[in-house]
Amino acid sequence: MKLARIILPVIALGLLFPFASFAQDRPAQRDVNPVFSMWAGVSPDCQSFGTCSLADVLEVTMNIGNAALGISGSIALVVFIWGGFLWLTSAGKSEKVQKGRKAMFGAAIGLLIVFAASLLINTVKSFIGAVPQEICSDGKDNDDDGFIDENCTQEL
Image (cartoon, rainbow, N blue to C red):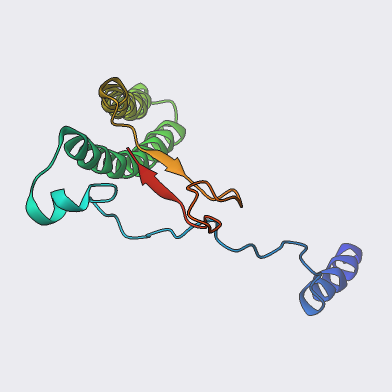
């Protein structure tokens, strides 16, 4: 009862008079497209006329791979949670422990395969020289056009 007399007023004050947050609102560094675009970073000629280079094909492959990496990471998290749940609720039954271990091990192997595929594609892109370079504004006129550069672009 004495503890409730102390805790209840503290909780009430915390809810009635919230303290200020010292977080700052920062503007976005660059525009981010929240929708997955398979064609991001591909040359306009490839999109319009179908005259695609090997770099364009690899860019589309990387975009699909990045989407698969995000989805597989989410699936692996769910499988890890499920395996841990099975292991924790096994109550000493060795078959449930093995089932939980197998689920967690399978999720880890699956992630390794996806990471290896992504590494392979990145390595191939770097060997053929098709890695896009991101050029961002540093407050200077980098292209000597008389204007300060403002936007980020990708160039091969």
